[in-house]
Length: 317
Length: 225
Image 1: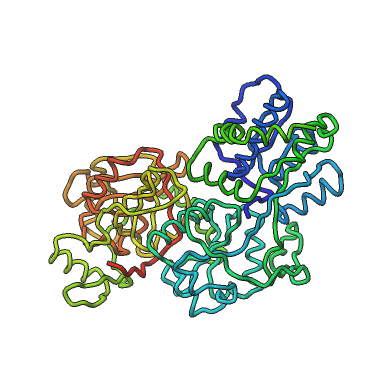
Image 2: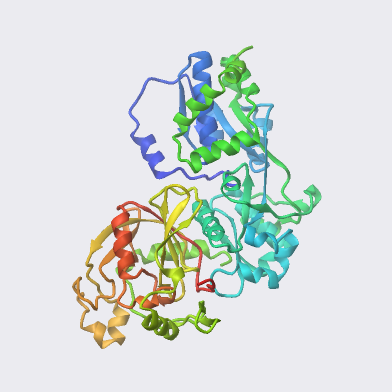
């Protein structure tokens, strides 16, 4: 899943950051990633904390790696979605190693893998079907006789791992591995579904694509750490040297906060420990922002209003 | 496409300086098929067949005619999605729908996929043949300095939408055609052509700044007329 260490900022967001005039200093800062559910949860935390504690909270658009740096440096206090296992290396460094970041105890279950549109689901039930060149021919979109499969955006950490998996399972021999921005891939899914064409693609949940379309997940052998040998992405040859022949480990994401901040504002840290979003709620958030195009802050205000008692409960000792 | 999408995007980036490069008609590949209701058979939808059918029916096969279709997407109304593989251009509408137009696309696809925007629109655009076309085609050579817009033989037709990356013009345009039977085929090089009524319709509905998504695609294997 996305969630790469190098998540880009939308240009508009960069411009906003650069052009932002000095404002009244906020009491705390929450980093907001560039995917819909992360923007929703960042703003829900902002509205909830402002309501429960009367503090002024700033939301800063930021990729995950910068967010961890900010959590250590003190320029960021809260990161709303730290995806695991994708960012285990950062967790190892900043949480386990330096102790600069604390992870909240509760988490939202997540998964990532490979998915099929309805027209592809009958042919592609498991990852083993991808190894059959006769089957994958129907995924051809450029007339060369080989099918295409989207493996993620070029900047995502997961995309390299999907390349490792394709090589390890062997379907890279008969499928072209396509790296392109997520908007392009999701529009390709829309067009494939609209014309009943088969398409297989990397997917992750919670995600609004599962509300837009009837998407099936391909079966894979259960995750086995012994068969999931990834060399550090710092090594330029890590894709060649790595191997992964099972499903991804079950994932989750959780809130992270600066350890120093928790000492300064223990009541807010307690609030963060109680936040209990469900996967269904996160999917709805993704849909509201990603599909219905609701403004994150407006959506957050409505969400907090509709869940007033629950948010109030998060703020009680 | 292994490992090449980024390469193609880079190449696309390099081509930004190449100027206008909408080639005239080239030889079509015979990879599209359509259903011929008269004979009850699937037939190759190549240039010859397309021309015969157009002469007979005075219109495109139904699939390539402008129509409203169900289209569920996270993209905002006003976004253009180009599926070169199936020869469709979608203009996203509210309420889970899109206006679908038939298109003719590059013989070898665009060679890239990605997100661009409508940077400029023009009525009766002038057309400048690329240098290699001027070199091989005396008819094109006549217009080396540019063919004025509004002429019936101007290959861009009555409207053009110029695709930009940021503030930079790409070599790619969405435009009309003087050969309406080529819609549904891979005939031009790089550009996206609609029949003239459709490009006028699209032009009237699209604002400068509209997001344009070009899907990963190539030559067509279309069935379903």
